[in-house]
Image 1 (cartoon, helix red, strand yellow):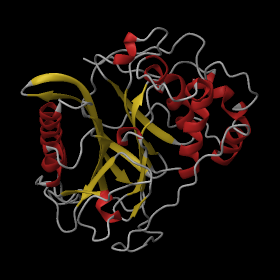
Image 2 (tube, rainbow, N blue to C red; image 1 turned 90 degrees about the horizontal axis):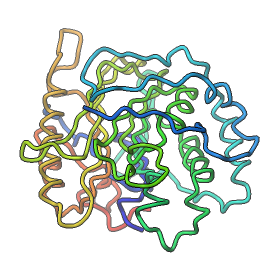
Image 3 (tube, rainbow, N blue to C red; image 1 turned 90 degrees about the vertical axis):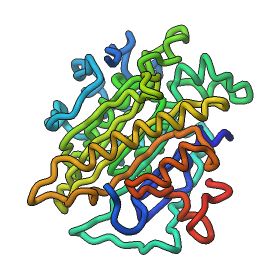
Length: 358
């Protein structure tokens, strides 16, 4: 399987799962610290599946369309139109997913990995933060562009895949969820995850390849969700990544969160860099732009009751489409932000990338 298609779950800084993708967290010690308007496709929300499942979601999916951004959004105070929405029991929704999928092969079992170099620590006044990173594969690309010749067509069908994706998310219930290649945000992920208590942001690629596919559901892009009961969103930035001062087709979302338990801030970023061999220099330039933006975002807004400059914890999740030998990897690992690959914790000495994940 292509590593770019593997999904990843990491528990920030202390726990790492065996799923895929790339997650960057601060290394030990002090760290230095116009979009596309998308309308839901006709016929809407959960696709054409006729199952009686997702009964708990009917009021959500039949409600008025949720707010959609007109432009690349800039930083500002938290605007949460979903904060008063009715929440759904995640266990009930998970049971409904399993009911729909009962004739499908069982979901692969994945155990969370607790690296030897970390301590399994959680306290009611300072609980762990669970971060899930996943490139879910844009539906339009899976069915009409990427050419999965060895994959049964029914496995690529959205009426099946949407339940598989939601089952995985519901199984782990992360505090923060970072997704790439999302082309069913407004008709699926935003209403469902909102009903589960999440606050979401989405940024589409300006020239998404999904738009070249007949009967597409709109452009794909990055999405970032955080649990409202755990975090307050202080500010959000939507970035169109540049290379040599020229805008590219790749984007990133950066959010500064405040933990409702500790009051401490946390910065989270999600991105998806340019794919395929031959584009290494472009990926490197995109990474440089993102790092520059992250350094600016994490160093501003310090006050007497806030974190000192350069000490805001930072988690960068994404599909970097790069091997550890590439320049973009070296940029992140040598950044003044003090970032380090979370997957190094899975190697025998904790200093190099493991040979295999999964």
